[in-house]
Image (cartoon, rainbow, N blue to C red; front, side, top):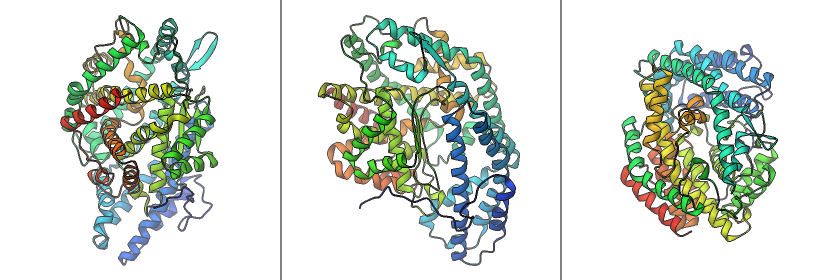
Length: 572
């Protein structure tokens, strides 16, 4: 089946076509109409669902644009105020109506006449929202939405000076690839020191967020925020205990491979002792990989690369470029990190990242490109709620794309040797990321099981967990003060709590997809598309099955897939 990226923005049938969200008074009448409408048949109910979905899509896109614009320019007070206005003045007033509409749906006698297979995951999610809604949480959630964005404002100002020039921390990362070890160490320490300057501000911000999150959990009848968040995120298919199993499997099955990878890197560099500023370096005489020059070059090359896989994939990025839905280059005042922001009405999402001509930026671009393709493929689903796919599947879309594209990276690299180095870098990263995922996830469990901890206890337990998953091949001596605050570089802890184990679960799914790709490229791409176009209309295990993989992160599965990656690495 041929797919087209030429998607159209959804038209309004219930809201005025040119509707703008300027104040609550303009929006509220539409909620009142939906709440008061009589539903006398299953046909009426389905039309009511479509009208409700239209309002949800409009509000979602409006909120997303406010966040996009603010993260692109954290120094603009006007953009910050527009974001804060939505989360302090609009969102809190929407929530009681959303609860009323959810109850109207569940209480309708015609709901049982809906196609139960088609609506199963949607209705399950609505029931969950009803169960978790508490009026007392509305002001706390509003404050949290604003507080969480302070992380980007603090981190966006972080710069270092090197040889008379100022660099964002993302831009400075390229010096960690230098063949000159003195430069690597100097820049590593400057980055660590710059982060350390804001340690108290970030600790205070995090403490404030933990306090509010814990209160939300208590208000909803949960013992801790972890248990509340598992319910809120719709983790119907696994438990905290499964996460603990994952942590242990990473420690036993993956960490020994990580040690091997860094031991080999130490040999390549001819070092007696490996230090953290050596992990990205190349041996003397070998220049660091520079796959592109700037954001435009990165985009052009990525489009060519995706065209090789499937022209539809390349068309998705072309469409986004045409709509100005890309902001790729790193610069001062821009929030850190990268994301693909789904836009429920437009269909074509927005990719934000901080490219600085590094190999890791290539990976980020194809990763976010995978997310974007997911947005395109699920855009035609009937309801906005159908497009809300589980994050564990969303990250399969992105991580599988990292691996699928590897065979087409010749557009980024001039020769076979560079291609091999790039693939090795990617496959090593597939393995070395697991301990960090386990570290961050285990830390979050501890944080929210112990919400009244002190800053000192936080530091001690972070170091305990970090050391549990740290490689023995790198010497971190003398860097304890920096390592004790190292968690602060992970924006997920501040902005999207408990969103991290998904990367581990999905990485396993992505390796499974790549294993398929190695056996039958056409079938693997077909399965990939089949899994993504379902959006959130199936359960997580069903979505994985549709993509030809199994939802399995047991120690046995982790061991099997790590062995596969290790064998692939050995061929390079």
